[in-house]
Image (cartoon, rainbow, N blue to C red):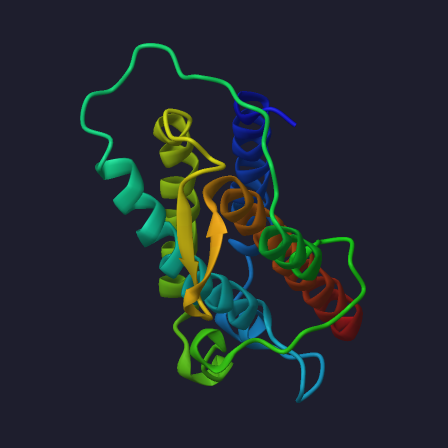
Length: 191
């Protein structure tokens, strides 16, 4: 897998995410966005808030790497991406097609849907995903294999930039799929 093709693919996938959220959730009421299919399941707004909490951490760290670039090259250097054991494990855990469920660590577990303002959560989500989309334009100038990011588990567990970017988009897709299943249940419940 090559860096430049992967960056383009990630941007396309993020565009699909942004389009889906705007198309599917913008017409829902606050009550529908907060509706939970079961007490132990997340609502649409909780899915999006979880993504905001988790991804803000990583996006802030990626932004720091991008801001350190300084002199911008005119042509990004392509490279073959290499995943390490940590990257492979995290990508497996967040795989949108995966059937395994892992509990969200406490720091990225959303507050109760009743305590969330859906418009604020969706606005933050769209802003973060748009920022990540635009950062990919500059991130192609960074060595995705060599640059490491701290994970939410601490500074002792790091992931390379390429795996982090792929993980973020996969994680977003995973929870967007979850939110779409909730929306389908709302529609079925309302009938």
